[in-house]
Length: 444
Image 1: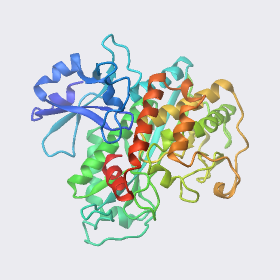
Image 2 (image 1 turned 90 degrees about the vertical axis):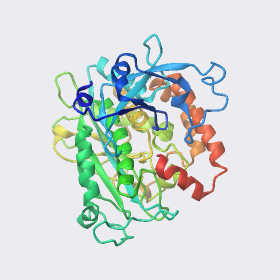
Image 3 (image 1 turned 30 degrees about the vertical axis):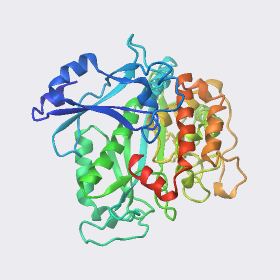
Image 4 (image 1 turned 45 degrees about the vertical axis):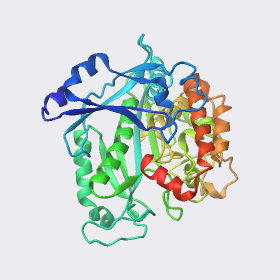
């Protein structure tokens, strides 16, 4: 666990960080001489810290605060160990951590533990989920208040147009992407293809798949921290906000997954383009749970500006083969690589909760063996389909009333998440659009 730190004796400080329910990094700065103590004993935060609202405020009337005396949990290192923080000037180590009770029990309000529990259920069934993520973000000049596309470091020009798959857009920010890929390699984040997307200054980076869903979530969480921090070093902002520009495409985070059996065989593959019965059963579970889980994929007020018809963000509850207008897409390709793509989430999600929700719903479908409705063809936006909740309040109500979510998440996490979102809804109503933009641009 200390290999990286031992190899870098110039590191003087450590950041310890855990993901709260909003995916915010909550942590401390600690002198590097305490590294051995951190590994053996961890550190301590109040349990309530993982359930703060988006502003970092305690939740009013939360049983975790005054009613319980704001008790501490113990936070121990994850399997990741020490990592560099390439976006800081001084050599610094990052130690990802997660929360436990003093007696060693996982804390049920920790989103990383929620995902670990779902993965454990797959393991008990003799299955291994294989997960990959695709993350979209904007590079933004926010120096003058309102966001705008940053000038190209090469030409000094601003190209305020969509540049889908334009090499010119990637080349304009080549120094940033070179540093980003070097940093991903240093942090063991499996960055794969980068493309320019449909908004000015918008890009997507794919992270490679692997048979460790926890690492996939770690990778996505760390990637977001890295991109935002590194952009600032380059004189820009980077934002995974779902809809930073009302007139341009929003940021999505797409999740791909397959499932291996004990022999390493893909259970979705039956040698045909359609895939196996078990693929359809997993799809049925995803579709059934989607209305109740929308809050996981659209967790903020701004998220619902992205979830509108004909805006490259699926709103109809349907599945299809090789069709990006559907919420659940089955990509084409070799049958051995048959997989499911979940396309609803925005870039502003907590990847631990989103992946836990997706894998949990798919597992319910596999266990129950239900059949989904027929796959759609054509434009999903033009079809009469059931829709995901179209308001933040409606998504919270569906999440709280769900019959699926209690089968996937611990009661404490469900309670805490609803309390966080209700408090955010209350106080977000006091902000105008410019204030919401300022809040979300850097935060999510």
